[in-house]
Image 1 (cartoon, rainbow, N blue to C red):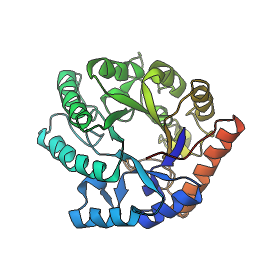
Image 2: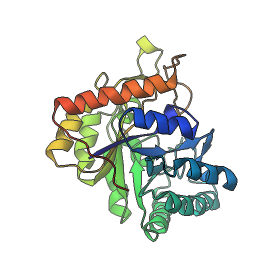
Image 3: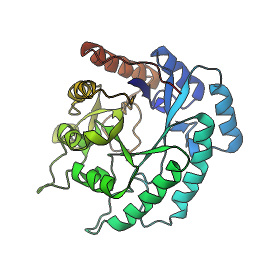
Image 4: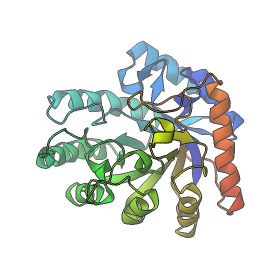
Length: 296
């Protein structure tokens, strides 16, 4: 098992992302945004400068948090949008040596028909495109079709050969379980139990359900302080011999969903990121879950 993080939550500057990673004693970044743009949307000269800064730094990009099929994308949009993102992402991932790409299954539609066949067709094309280049596609349980419940995620896994999972511990707390009558909030431990055999990578986020006390908005907290079952999931991963990446995604200073979360702070994002990483390390140390450096 190795530790990494979505370092744009510490800073938008690649230099600061590297510094924060090293301060935590880690050697890997899950890259998503740099200077306000997803890495597959950077201009070519900008991307080249990022590569130059990373070279010789001792820090590597282990995974890429793409925007492919994410909660901001509609499955009814022209598929060329997705195709273009894939075409830009693959050569950049290969240049950086990134082994995993985070994908989603498009946003949930405000209608009964979720166009499941179309989603599956697109996911197969996405996964096949990356797999042909030796890159593993990881579907995340977020505000997308697969994130509607563990049952929905399993439906996609059975239909899309080669797709694996990145399990986000905190996302269930603010998503309704659309497989159950009454649409209760999802339970992170229950979701994890349904999909754990297919998890190749983990996002550590912790969160509390929206409630009247927090203006009906989710509230992000440090790992182990919310409803993400972080400690319990880390214990189970340890017992299962999990050897993949565990990546922090605090969301305490920066939230990339809909701007309606409870957390707004003037504290330095880098300080939050470092504290978050150290709190996760404390949890892992307390259960004897030992990390090793990322091997590029």
